[in-house]
Length: 239
Image (cartoon, rainbow, N blue to C red; front, side, top):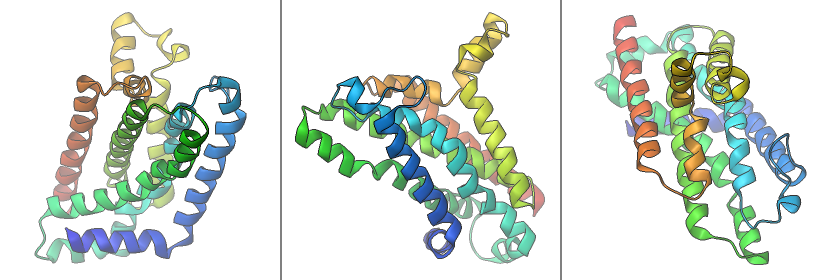
């Protein structure tokens, strides 16, 4: 698993696409944090010493960044034929999946942790609540793990990276919008409740309020574990 993890991390930093998406995502995150974006108020207008606006932007950022990061995880292995080499190595499928997941999660988590200088700056000029801030970071990292595991699973169904990107993007977008009234109003109360429950961004709300909710934590962990388990099953069926 350590070998797979280091191999994947080298791939992320040896190709320009990782830097392009990371820098672009960070630029727009910081831009909208200070200028505002639709229902998310600008930092100076909110008049609250908090990074909540930055965290509220992350679900939208993940919808674009996670497909770019995870589209190649399995699609590239299938297209280049290296999946056959991996399958012959004395490494369990679970270790391969976990190693790739941890590498992708580490890369995406950098987007979350890149706000640490911003957090320290806000703490320097205002009265930052570190308890709620840590809850925001915990929820963001858990949500990143869920999005990455979903992207990995979807990448395992195709050999083409572009197809994987589009598939991951639309599924992630659908799960994000499922928490909004514009979608739920067209569904029955039962389906609307189920759609809201499945929405990953919906389970970030408690963390955004500064509360580490046990139910939402278990949901993120269970969702991630289920996606990774399904990923293992798909790989075994295709190799």
